[in-house]
Image (cartoon, rainbow, N blue to C red):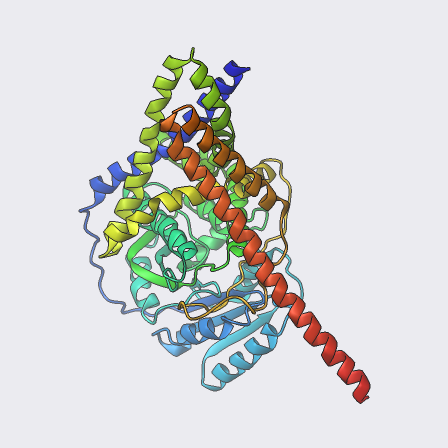
Amino acid sequence: MADYVVITYFISLSLLFMFGSSGFVMIYQYFKHKNKKEEKLPELKEFPVVTVQLPLYNERYVAERVIEATCNIAYIPENLEIQVLDDSTDDTVEVVAELVKKYKAKGFDIKHIHRTNRTGYKAGALKEGLAVARGEFIAIFDADFIPKPDFLLKTLPYFMADPKIGMVQTRWEHLNSDYSMLTRVQAMALDGHFVIEQNVRNKAGFFINFNGTGGIWRKECIIDAGNWEADTLTEDLDLSYRAQLKGWKFKFLNDVTSPAELPSEINALKSQQFRWTKGAIETARKILPKVWKSDLPLGKKIHSTFHLTSNIVFPFILLAGILNVPLIFIKHQGGYEHYFAVMAIFVFAFVGSFLFYLYSQKDIYPDWHKRIFLFPLFMAGSMGFAVNNTRAVIEGLLKKKSEFVRTPKYRITSKKESWTGKKYTPSKIHYTVFIEGLLAIYCFSGVMISFYYLEIAAVPFQLLFTMGYGLVSYLSLKHAWLARKYNLSMKKIESVQNEFTKIKS
C-alpha cells in the first residue's frame, strides 16, 4: 500500500512541478524581453466607426456606472455606437431603458438590445449584437468595468499600423483591491496573469487570449474566425485561439489599463473561478487538436498546450494535500529515503511561482515589497480552491454542460461599502464547502502528526493546506449565512407588505 501512495504522490508532484516550473520559463522570457521598447505609433488621425458592446445580466448596481463611463469615451460622437446587450430579468431592464433614453436625448448613438432569453449566454448576446453593429471595430466591457476616456485613442492606432492586428487587450486595473484580504489576493493573481503571462507571451510571440472585457476587436477578425460560439464557458479564450490559428495577430498593452471591480464575496468568486476553470478545460478539448494539426512551430504548440491545460493541476493539488498525511507515517517508518530525497527537488517549483508574482508586483506597484508578503496567503488560497476547481476540471473533461453563472457586482470601491444587504448575493451552500471543512481538519491533523514525529519539513505545506481549506470553507459559510439572513429579512418585509395590502383592500 505504501508503494502505491509514494508512487501516486510522486506522479502528482511531478505534474505540479512541470506546470510550476513554467514560472521559470516566464521569468526567463520576462528578462529577455524586458527592455524591448514598444514602437511609438502616431496619434490617431483616422476615426473609424467603433461599436462598444456592454453585455449585462441583472446589473442594477453597476449598469449606470458602465454606461456613463462609456458615454464619456473621447471620440467623434457620430462614429461611436454603444450597444447595451441586456439579458436582464429584473429591474435592470427599466434602469437601462431610462439611461439609454437619457443619453439618446443627448445625441449619443446608444441602443438597448434586450433579449427575452439567454440563448448562448454572453456569447449569444455578443453575436446578436455583432449582427447589427455598424462599427468596423468592436470594444467590449463587462458591467463591472469603467472604460477610460482615452481607451479608443490608445488602442486604435495599433489597428491602423497593422491590418493583421485582430485584437488589442488592455491590462485590468482593480478598483477595490484594498477592500479586503480576499480582493488583495485576487489582485495579485490577476496581476501575475496580465503583467507576466499576457505581457511576456505577447512579446515572445506566443498565443495570448482576449480576457472577455477591456479589449477591442477588428470586426473582420471575429467573423473570419467563425464568430462567437457558446459551446464552452470561456467564449473569449475559444475565439482568441481560433482567430490566432487563422493568422490574426493580437496585441497586449501593459501600460494601458481598464479599471474593474473585483468580487468582494467568496461564493461569487468561487462561481467565477469554476466558470473560468471549466471553460478553459472545455476550450482545451475543443482547440488543442486544431493546434497540433496546424503548421505552427513546435515551440508554439507546446506553449499553447501548457496555456490551455494549466488548470489540470487542481486535481493533483487536491491529491497531494490528501496524500501528505499518510506520507508522514511512511517517511517515519523508513525505507523510502531515496524517493523523498528526489522529491525535495520539487520545492523549486514554488520558487518559480514566487518569482513570477514578485516581478508582477514589482512592475506596477511602488510598494511591491509590502504586497509580496501576501504570497503565502495566495498559495494557501490556491490550495483552498482545489476542491471547487477540481470539480470544474472533472465536469469539463466529462463534457457535462452547465449554466453560465455570472459574477454579481455590487459597486464596491471602498472599505466603507458592503455587499451585505444587496441583491444577487449567493446564499446556497454547496456540498464542496463541507468537503473543504473536513480537509482543513484532516490537514491540521497532519500538522500535529508532523510535529509528533518531528517531520518538521512537512509542516509548512501542511499549514498552507490547512489555512487554505479552513479559510475558504469558513468564508463560504459565513458569506452564505449573511446572504441568507438578508434574503429572509426581505421575505419577511414582503410578507408584511402583502398582508398590509390585503387589509387595506
